[in-house]
Every structure is written in structure tokens, then in C-alpha cells.
Image (cartoon, rainbow, N blue to C red; front, side):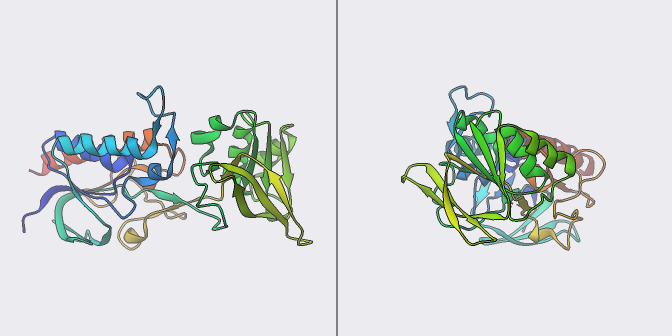
Length: 308
């Protein structure tokens, strides 16, 4: 079985951009799409902040265009997940749901997934009022009531950001003090458009079948529940990088994200590169993931040229 020049694991903006660039470099990339082909944008309704689409575009449609463009230049796709990898020797081996593939180089672009609450209505209204990214979706809730769940720095940052848009932002937190740094917590409490419901949890998301209309908030001290009207419900309890496949293979940081070398997209294994949210826990945008996919593809192409 002859090895492919490059196998890309993941098919979100990072993976598909890497596929486009490596395909145009005549490397005939093979993309292992994953069961959640297309990445997080497949769970998003309208995307208004991706350059080139002044009227906005639906997330799934944007990813279809990414895939079609990569396919046009010869990228091939394998449906399903990568089950295991062997990076201990070259060519590298990737076991997939469709069989074994081997590669001279690999680009890991498996992304990250937002942590969910798992409460009734959350999944039903995802992308229709329930959001996991304030930067992506805050604009949609101008002059509307917004509820944010979380107590860490990310939740504080997102809640403060959302006060630029919402008429009021209510932060629901399980404890009586934030886990966030004091400066971030103090900044939120001082914001006149923000309020905090301490010792509380959201137990249900309600809507009219089309969009969110309220959430049920339970007081964890006295057990009482009440409805909080809102149009936007932001879950800010963190992300989980999709790196379980690489736990004993690549170096991960304390949160499970792939550690890169000092520059570029290089991992500690020659010929293995990483791109997108699988290593980026700061920006987490489609456009930055696409840029990282481009960078990984160029690094990969140059590395392969040096090997040959």
C-alpha cells in the first residue's frame, strides 16, 4: 500500500483550508472528515463575520463551499472518524472507520467542541438563540435580554463583550464567587448593564419552537425556580479539544490542547503538523482556523519538499 503525501484529520475550516492548499500544491491530500464533518460551523445558523460574504452565509453552506473548493483541486475525502494513529515510524498510519491509510505527512485539524450543559432545550435551540461564542453571535442580540452561564475568565470576557449589544446581560453562576481573576470579576460587577444571579443554575431553555424566549433558573440554596426572559443564551463553561486520539502520541497542555513548537504549525514529531482550534484556545474563529490551515499546509509542503 503506497503512502499518501499528506493525510488531514478533520474537516472544519482548518482542515479544509489545509486540503485546498495541499491539493493546489499537487500533494493529493486525503481528508479524514470525522463523524462531525464540517466542524463547529455545522451547528451554526448564520455566519456574518467571515470575509467575502457581506450578506452573511449559513454555517453548513460555508463549509460545503470549503469542501467543494478543495475537491475541485483533487482533495479526496474519507467519511467517518480516525480510530487510532501511529506516528512512531514513517510512513505514519491512520486507522479509520473505512480502513487503514498511510501518509508521509499528517495535518491534525480535529478542532474543539464547546462544553454543553446538557439541559432540556439546549440542543433544540442551538444556533437559534443558544450560542457558545459571544464574538460570533453577540451582534444578533442588539437591544435584547441575554443570559450567560459561567464563572471563569472566559465567561466574564464574553459577558462584558455582550453588554455592547444586549439591553441587559444576566450572568448565572453556581457559586457565590467567580472562579475568574478578581479584575475580570470586578469589571463585570461594575458594568451597569450586567447583573449576577449567584448560587444559581439554568435548568431548562424555553422557546416558541423557532427561537429562545426564556430560561428556567434554579436557586441552588432554596430550590426555587423562576423563568428569566431572554433572547440570547450563551454557554461559557469552556471548550474541550478533540485530542483524545493523541493523548499518548503528541504533547498536550494542561487543558488538552496540542502544544506546537516555537514557530509555525510544527509538533514535536517531524512530519506531523497541527492547525486550528485543536491547538488554539484563544481566538477560536473560523477565519483564524482557516489561516492556521493555510500555514500548516505551507509548512507541510515545504517539509515534504525538503525530504524528497
